[in-house]
Image 1 (cartoon, helix red, strand yellow):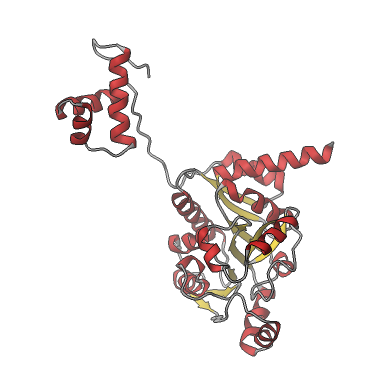
Image 2: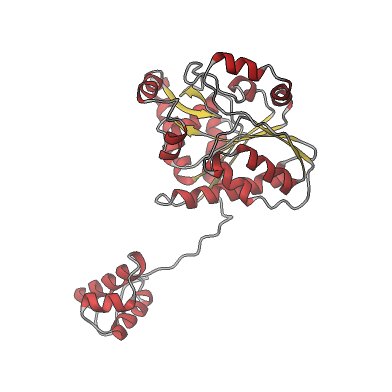
Length: 332
């Protein structure tokens, strides 16, 4: 739509319309505040807002929360060899909104693909938490939910794997196995004693008979929330050593390089499914979003830990850029 005003097609007037529209729509100012700032009447501000929309300075769009980018998804499936990719439109400046979009898309995918009576392994993470909150299955599945790792103390719900397992079992119908162990223990002796117990063996044995694993992907540049969780275990020297080793991400607190190779000594005494055992799960669904996760996502795919990916447009584009860049380096 071309920008035209009725009898006042001047640069100065167009700038005025743009200023009013920006203050109102982008900065959240009220009409009264704008009138005071620009020394005009409220009625003139109201007329300017209507005119700005009429001439095309303000354009309103409505986003379909279920819309996916099938072209980018097809590119990911073809280039990375994924069995399934789902790519949603997020918001590059609102990661929480993007995580919710990815969560809703993953919840819909699970409702579409999960078989009845399946054993579902569940990891943790903020995006995975959004998946559990978005679950609205059309029918019960009688699932058996198995935590893929131990829990932590007084932390955000996104890192309470037991609560997410309980919610999943309620929404889909079925049972969940309690796993009231810490995700990280402090000594080899404590770790060995815990892993030898019958209660722990019930869970770790179940890891070998999963039908589906659902988990988030972390990157090496840990956010503030994870910095607090790992404060006693992942100091600056350890993180620097991991970077020097080429670590790009983690799944259930097991870290790996860009080619997917596990870094065994990144964190010791971690109570969670080993990456090698995860690789053998028939169906592995990862949920992750944001361009900053691209290298970690690509490494997870390269390692064979992911066959289904639910992500956002920004992450998908960066994953494909990294993939193409690496392919060109190999071809040289």
